[in-house]
Length: 415
Image (cartoon, rainbow, N blue to C red; front, top):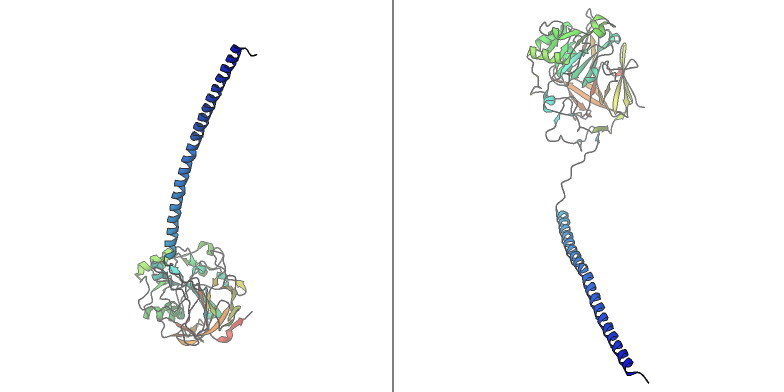
C-alpha cells in the first residue's frame, strides 16, 4: 500500500514538471516564430529591391530598343563616290571615272596635283640648264615640274626646267644661254624666262616679243642676282658655274616688276586626270624604254613599274640631281617631232620648227600612243591631242618633253 503523503508529493512534482514543460514549449515556439520573421524581412526587402531593379532594367532595355529602332529607321548617309585608281583611255572615248577636285582644292597647272590657291596661281619660271658632261650634275634639276630637252649646236642638248615651287631652292644651275625656240617652250607655260646670255636670234625675240626674262649677262639690274658656285669652281670650267638661288629669282622678278600670276588668256596645254589616278593607255603599245639619239648625245627613259615612272638616263648613266643625289623620274614623257634646220652661221646654230604642227608620242604607265601637236605662234601655248583629235590627258606628276628633229632618232623597246 502506497504512503498517502509520498503519493501526493509525487503527484505535485509531476504536475509542476508538466507545467514547466508546457511553458518551455510555448517559449520555444515564440522564439522560433520571432527568428523566422526577422530572417524573412531582409529577404522581402531584397526581393522588393530586385523587383524594382528588374523593372528599371526593363525600362532601360525598352528605351535602348526604342533608340535602336529609331536609328534603324534613319535614312542612310549618302555614299561618297569611289573613283578607280586606273582610268582607261583609248584616245577616242571620253574619260570616265575621273575624280573631280574637292571643294576648296586647287590644281597645279604643271603637275595636276592638289596645291594651295597661291601655288596654283603662281606664275612659274623656266630656267636654262647646262647639259654637257663636264657640267654634270645639275643642281636642283629634280625640283623642276616640267623638263624640256632639245638639240643645240655641236649635236649636244640643252635643258630647260619649269619650276613652280622654287623660292627655297639654293644654287639652281648651272644656268646657260638662250635659244629662240626655248623661248617658245617657256611660253607654253606662261613662264618667266631665266637665262645667261643668248644667241642673236634669241635676243631679237626677247626684245621684239617683250618677253619677261631674267638675264645674267646683259641686264645689269638683275645680273647681280646670279653668282658663281664655289663648289663648281673647284672642279669644272668657269662657264659651267653660274647659278641662282630661288629667293634671288623672286628678287629679280620684283626688280623687273613682272606679273607673278598666270595670264587670264593662259590655255594650259597639260590636262590631267584626278590626283591619285593614273591613265591606262588601252590602245597603246608597250614601251619599256625610249631612246633618243641627239648626235653626240643619247637620252634614255626607262620605265619603272614599281614607281610608275620613266627614269632618266644620259649616255647610259643615271641622270642625277646634284643636290639630292636622286635619279630623275617622270610620270609622263612627251616626244614632239619638230624639224631642225642648220643656220650655217659661224656658231653652227640650228633652227627648230617649234610652231606649226606635227606628230609625237605620249608615254605613261609603260605604254605609248601617237599624238599630234600644234602651236599657232611663239607666244601661244602648244595644243596636244590624241591622233583622234581629242585633247591629251596626262597622269598627275612630272613631265619630260623631248623635242626631236626626226622620227628615226627615236627607238622604243617594248619589253
